[in-house]
Length: 176
Picture 1: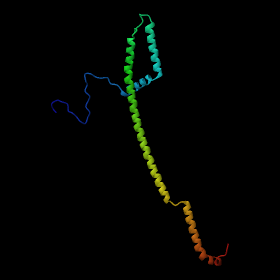
Picture 2: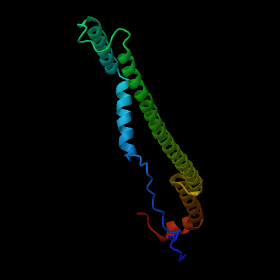
Picture 3: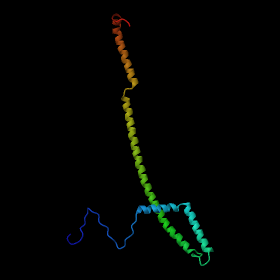
Picture 4: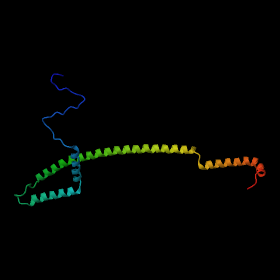
């Protein structure tokens, strides 16, 4: 590659080429948050009330003001243009806000599923552990069982000692 062309390196990203028509750059998160605020405002009663006040004022001004002060005559072409412009900007902003909300909902749903799967796995693990403890407790001698076994051994010893010791006990040892 000694012919003057730049060497292509695969271990490094290529630098972006500048085009003669450069688009403006913007922060997507800031723009998205701004569009969500606008979309949230457009969906409120306050916006509808203010929009109604502006339109009524516009109509009253352009019908009752002196002819020289009117800026939009009877067919109200300029008002129609302003409302169309507002709608043409509002619709994409609302769609952008809905897309961002759908993305957040999808992420929350995935996190909920992962949390639910962890909960299920933990519950199954604890169920298995409890079952193992129950099985282990079935093999452990309880206090009542040990007491009954010791009493049985004591009776057996007393019976064995009673037969042999009873004859010698009275003769050899005085009662106390």
